[in-house]
Length: 370
Ligand SMILES: CSC[C@@H](O)[C@@H](O)C(=O)COP(=O)(O)O
Image 1 (cartoon, rainbow, N blue to C red):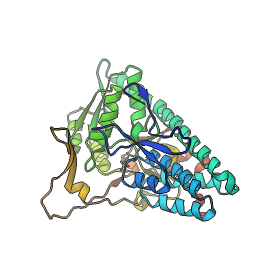
Image 2: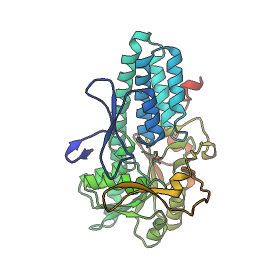
Image 3: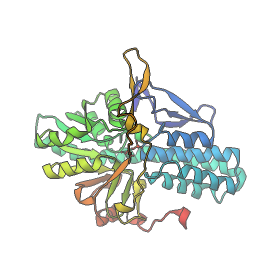
C-alpha cells in the first residue's frame, strides 16, 4: 500500500541483497521509520517486541530470520536452533510455525552451500504468496460489503474491526481490511469503526493510520463502544482477522474480539473473520487448546503517547503498585462467526466448511512434528 505516494510492503530485502528491512510498527503512528535486520537475533527481537506483528507478517519475518541465521551458519544444528529461537518469540499466531515449516522443507535437504540461496528464494516466495492470498481474501470478501451496500442504497456501509488486520499485519493488503480496501477502491461508501484495541492500541495507532493513508473514512472508538453502536443500528457488519483458526472454525484473535462477537450475535450483526489458509491449525480440534500469549503487565499499566511538544513518552495510567494481567488474545467460538473469508472463498465456520475449501490440507500436520 502507499505511504505519501510511495508503495511499501511491510518487509523487503534491502538493496545490499541480503539484509532485511521492516516498517518499525512501534514507532507508528507518530513517525514512519524503517529498521534493518541483519541477524537472527534482530529478527527474533523484532517479532518479540512487536516492531512487526500480525499473524502473516510474523510468519514472513520468521522466514527471513531463517535466511539471516543461515548466512552466519548453514549447518543442520544452526538451522534447528534458529527455528527453535524464532518459534519461541510469540505463541499464538500459527503462521509462525507454518512459515518455519515451509523454510525447513525448502532448505533441510539442500547441500549447505545452497541453503542460503534456497532460503532467500523461499522467503521471497512466501511474501509474494501472502500478497496474492490477501488480495484474494479482499476479492472474496468484497461481495459481502457490496451486498450490504445494495441493502441500503445511497447509504454508507459501517464496518467494525478490532485490532489491526490490515496491510501492516501482513505483507500487503491485509486480511480483514482487504475487502474494505477493495470496496473503497470500487467506490462503495464504506466507513470503518476502529476499536482502539487496548492495551497496545493497534486499532488507534495502526488501523487508523493505514485507513487514513488510503483515504478510507473511519472513526476510532473506545473498545467498549461497539456494543452500544450495534444496539443503535450503526454497525452493518464486523470483520476481524485471526491468529489461529482451529479445524472446527474457532478463532483466536486479539483480546476483546470475543466480546464484539457476542454483541454482534445479540444484535443480529454479521461477524466475519478473514484469514489465509496458513492461519488454520488443522492439528487443533477446538479453540480451548490454542496457546494464549500472556504479555507484560506494563502494557496495561502504562501507555505511550505524544505530548503537545511532539515528544513520544510513556506514562503510568494505573494505581501505583496494583497488579495487572495481560492475556493478549481470546477465542471466539465458531457458533458466533457468520463466515470465514479466505483466499479460496467464504465458508461457514465449521469443520465441513473449512474442509470443503481446503480439502488437500486437512491431513496437514506440522512437518516439524513428523
Ligand atoms: C491479519 S492479522 C490477524 C491478527 O494477527 C490480528 O488481528 C491480531 O490480533 C494481531 O495481534 P498482534 O498482537 O498485534 O500481533
